Image 1 (cartoon, protein in one colour):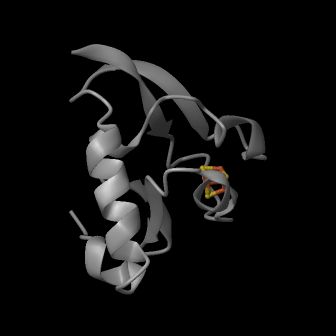
Image 2: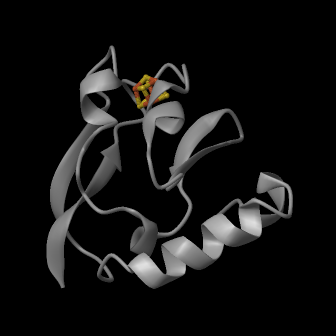
Length: 92
Ligand code: SF4
């Protein structure tokens, strides 16, 4: 489906991590020192990260992506309360 989702312009990104810190869904994680979307279903497209980016590198753009899934988000948050965050991040 076409919907709003986070997009990072790596030419502008200085890897400060502010977008990662403010995401209420923990949809972004620093991977290899760059913010990466863990899974599109975790991004609700609200854009809280956009206003925190000092370089304009984080934007919300209409993209063909799987729909936001609140149930998967709840399950992931439950698992993260038990296991370390790094277990749920994969490098592409
Ligand atoms: S806030 Fe902007 S510059 Fe900082 S890590 Fe996120 S995208 Fe990169």
